[in-house]
Amino acid sequence: MIRPDGQLNHDILPFEKGPQDQCGVFGVWAPGEEVSKLTYFGLYALQHRGQESAGIATANGEKILVYKDMGLVSQVFNEAALESLLGHIAVGHTRYSTTGASHWRNAQPTLGKTAYGTIALAHNGNLTNTAELMELLEKRYPNHESELRGGNTTDTAVLTALLTGNADASLEATALELLPLVKGAYCLAFMDEHTLYAARDPQGVRPLVLGRLERGWVVASESAALDIVGASFVREVEPGELIAIDENGLRSTSFAPKKRAGCVFEYVYLARPDTSISGRVVYEARVEMGRTLAREFPVEADLVMPTPESGTPAAIGYSEFSGIPFGHGLVKNAYVGRTFIQPSQTIRQLGIRLKLNPLREVIAGKRLVVVDDSIVRGNTQRALVKMLKEAGAAEVHVRISSPPITWPCFYGIDFASRAELIASGLGVDEVRQSIGADSLGYLSKEGMIAATNQPESKLCTACFTGQYPIELPATERLGKNLLERGVATIREEGHVHIND
Ligand code: 5GP
Ligand code: MG
Image (spheres, rainbow, N blue to C red):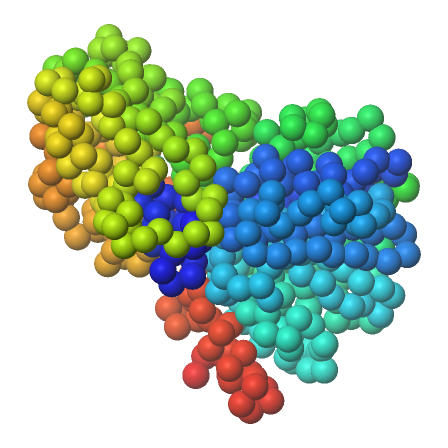
């Protein structure tokens, strides 16, 4: 859905700036396969990670081709476009913007010219030292001819420019020298004409996995994308690892020691339920979160219902533990968010109804437990509670399968500023009042962590705790529009002063 400000939104409230996911990356090395089609279906499986733009680049040993545009994977590509993307290596990307606006020029894969050829790079995550890297770029390669010159304003373009600048070293050697200097969350899939590369930050904040095809290799943000292209799961790309794949096979190098801090919100909301992260199937984790929520916040009620779709596994767990029957009180139109048509004012006023319609016969007179995965600004639950009460619900008890979100994410999720996070200003009972629920319970941090089967020391819980595992720079050197400011300065003065 294009919001009034031109941004895509797939939230339940289609006209509001909701929290957004990050990106999906996919890479394949497979001589004899139609790699563009494998990538297309891989990206299709990763569509939930970014709906703003999609792109695929292919390499055939001699040259690189790229096709990218704004929109969903299915809107960007057709059979003819995929057939023109020839080669035996491919990288693909679905984007939600975290640094740099949602704009055609910022779509990925990003291209760069090296002394030997070309690279194409796809990135999921968000860098926290983009300003520093920009300074490094201007110092090392003041005459770089990267996409930044053409108005690309992403941290990804800065990384691509740094990877291509060194005429005296191979791409692999440059990457091994550069990656230890890059801070923040990044999963990269990139290639030159001959080799596919994958790299993951030393914390492994975002997921990235390696898979095997009969005649090749695949890397993908989520294991579900391996399933969809018929690749078998081999292992995760390790935190701090660079993998290179070419006709000589697979080489692995560790470029930094592991300090694992996997994003806990991948388990709560971001990843597909059929994905497995660090050995834990996301669906199982979510059902367990729901069971624990029922133990921590029981209530007498007639029906447990999910906020579709993201609340469904936790609602199943809540129902199972509490013994209260599970049912659907809302019907979701799965295709909202897939249209570029601006609704009329009359329809816009109906807001949430475009996406969810209550089943009055199920709801009327009932005491409901409504389960959702998270509250960010509170707008979804406020609209839902109102709609359910209008449809005749006797009581609405909201249960959230994660703790209150009180801190922004700098590692790839664009939630909101701290001021916009409802729980950063209000206590639980004030949030309850604000959304109009009869009661409200949030899963404890301990309950959430236990459900992931990971030790707390190996997770990033910053959005719930404010404990950021990767050091953050001063506020003026952070933020989505950092490089828009920077690029404006480049244009005016011919050089960069990002921090002024
Ligand atoms: P709120 O309306 O409170 O601002 O947002 C909460 C809703 O947004 C929940 O239904 C949750 O499933 C959804 N949500 C949480 N995180 C994300 C995200 O990163 N992207 C999108 N699109 N929705 C999210
Ligand atoms: Mg939701």
